[in-house]
Image (cartoon, rainbow, N blue to C red; front, side, top):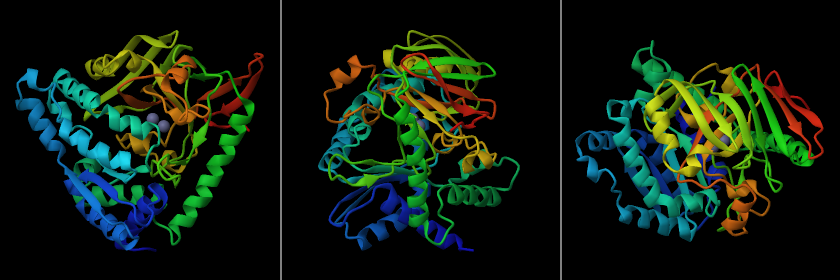
Length: 411
Ligand code: ZN
Ligand code: ZN
């Protein structure tokens, strides 16, 4: 049984050795919430031990975003500082490792007007576009790991006193991230190999579409001829290092064709989007675009998301996660995409990943777009997986092959 200190150190080790795979001589950009300082200091200490010449630390205070959303005149909300973008871009472009510590209050921004929040988000996405382009292209090694901030823990465990809620959330994070074992790096290597086996099977089939069926869901997702299934990690363009962008990760994913999706999908978990909740929602697609939507809660927030741009109404990711994945088995709803997306099959509205197209990072974007790549300023995952999910793969000749039955791999 490891102590809390050892597990937190393991999490820092995993973020550096597995997450960004930090190399001696490589600088580190470390961004995270002020509440996450305890983990960020451990990450910085280990980074220097590993030979990093400099760790640039940027603390964020999400309450500042709420203050601005409530106080700023509406016409000023369309502003985001280019200087902040330029700073981060310079580091990312040089190939510095980019490590983000997450963990937000899922409800914080619900105290503000959704339209005002949407305006702020749009401005940030627009200005930060060059940085997100580097991220999506895997130019530099990057990763996200979460910190059990108290407001988040209170949302996941509303009936527990705060210190117990935080402790329970840490237990869940350590377990999902395999930070609670003696050899966490070795455990991750074995896990990555297991994910790679499912990826190989799916790539071997070269499906032209997948059919998803579950209560409230009947969706045909066409796949580009040049789609590639991916899992676990990728090699960074800047230094070739194999990095794992999400801790935890359980998903095997590819790109839907931007204009070949039809039918209806019903979400099986609430979506926490920019500090606001969207729940009980379904989306109907024709020729790849959302033509109808419903939400029991947060319909205006969902509308704001769909109206970011044309690509926000189309899909950029299809990810498969067996219902038996450890995060799913925890039975917890995390109100946090990094965890909830790894508990269930999901789709993303918005931008696709170049890495999910054959030689996608080496070819101009226009050629990928012609093959079905979705362009957008946003990328937002929502979950549709459950123990009732059935998926068939359609071969180019029309033959159907079982991919998932009752939420589990069928092969
Ligand atoms: Zn995903
Ligand atoms: Zn995603």
